[in-house]
Length: 277
Image (cartoon, rainbow, N blue to C red; front, side, top):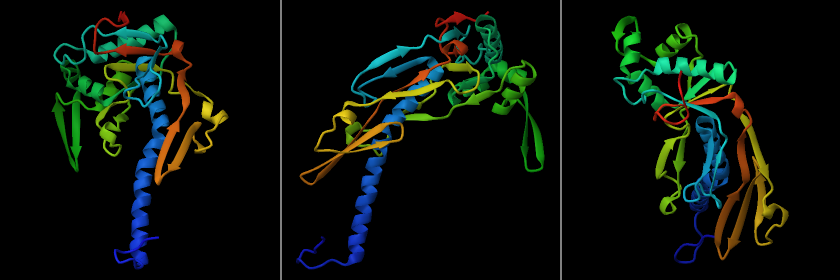
């Protein structure tokens, strides 16, 4: 019921615009809140895949309880960190890594996974540039470029020379939102697949999404209305004194079920895990 300052009726077009704006505002605020528990599950899944751990920080992860789980996935470390572009030998490290996994765990992995920043380190290394010659094509022109390896070139060498599976990039990122009450713009962004890690697996089916009921699902609060969304996420809403508040919760965790059939190469330090042969 919208009135103008004189108490008269307002044009219906203006009312429709106001309602549309209010709906859009609610949608912008509701969607991230409803999605938050599943986004947190995604964050944990990528951490488990890349580092073999699950870490919940109550200050950052919108969780009530903080905890850390180490799935004790086999890890190896490189002889020289990959950020040392003059001395690191990423292609040889990957070859030794896959061989060590075969000898130690007795599995033939078919998937190597890392994030784009790790791929950039590989491309920047002198050893990579020295071993690759790229051919760049633009329209009808094709030129030879020495010292300018590409993502595709690296995979050709890994598959052709080293007989390894190609590298798969995971470019997903995590956004931290809600600083100062602002959920529209992230206050921090980082790679979902952790930096300094390469995961060796058989495919990408690594575990299961496990959950249990929340207390409110068994003993609901009479002042709230509830709905259960995808992934057993409980959405609750309270409308009181003209204000609407929306919350979403989930008691869930992604769990690695193939921890004995995967391994992780640590590329940013030379002490974590076993040394490469």
